[in-house]
Amino acid sequence: MSSRMAGATLLRHLGPRLFAAAEPASGLAASARGIMPAAARIFPARMASTEAAAPHAKQEDDAASPQAAATPEQQNKKPVVSYWGIEPRKLVKDDGTEWPWFCFRPWDTYRPDTSIDVTKHHEPKALADKVAYFVVRSLRVPRDLFFQRRHASHALLLETVAAVPPMVGGVLLHLRSLRRFEHSGGWIRALMEEAENERMHLMTFMDVTQPRWWERALVLAAQGVFFNAYFVGYLISPKFAHRFVGYLEEEAVESYTEYLKDLEAGLIENTPAPAIAIDYWRLPADARLKDVVTAVRADEAHHRDANHYASDIHYQGMTLNQTPAPLGYH
Image (tube, rainbow, N blue to C red):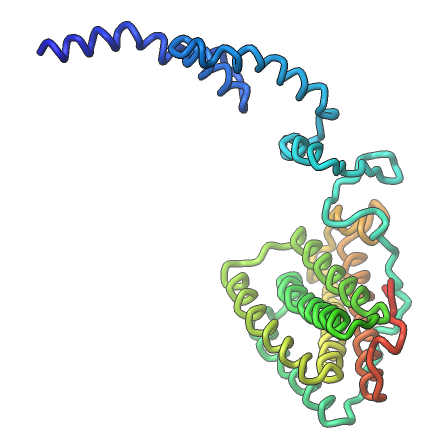
């Protein structure tokens, strides 16, 4: 009983010192002001130097840190960026407002070449071409089954798949260049540009519609299977792989043409264009969804031509690095 009473007396005397309330603050400063005074009362000699140095350290941090960023996330990253000596460039748009996108920069933007012929088709003659064409055309069956006339949802799935081949091809060409100590002819960069462009299509349509849970599951399965299948296919026959993508892009052009027909017929609401699309394709401020789909279709037509061209190079007995790549071909 005496020990319990002694413990209660001790807690009554030390409680206010250990659990003294500190004035409200946020972040690490709150922890320092809340914990340090209480701990200093118990360990005065041990904590004196740290407590005295804290205001000086805070002043140094305030002097060393640059101006506050626009968002709390950027403010949290400032000390790390400042420590490594890497400062992000502050970019502005033509109207003087701050550039809002991290995923692409003003020099990555362009005006789409919508004058390109969207009806061109490579007639399959060789056996490999016929196989590639047959496989792509057979994919129309599950597309019509799953998506029917839901073009925006189909575009989401299409872009998650279409961005895989150029990335795989670029990685394999990169490894080949390192392994053989040779230049790539610019084809690594050209394929990476294509992959990034396809991913920007996906980011754009994410502002138009959101995938359902089963569509996300379908993307997960399709990407896992398609990545490995295309990886093996490109190792075995690059000319078949590029021909396959050429036909896949032809199919994408047809899909976006159907999308445009439904927009023009009023079956789908022609909503305002997403802000990311306006900046990426340098569209007018009053651009509509129809303008976005037109720009995406033009991109797909250019990808169609680039991949058929790459396949033709292989069919002529040459490698890609022997022919200049179509860099910046939009």
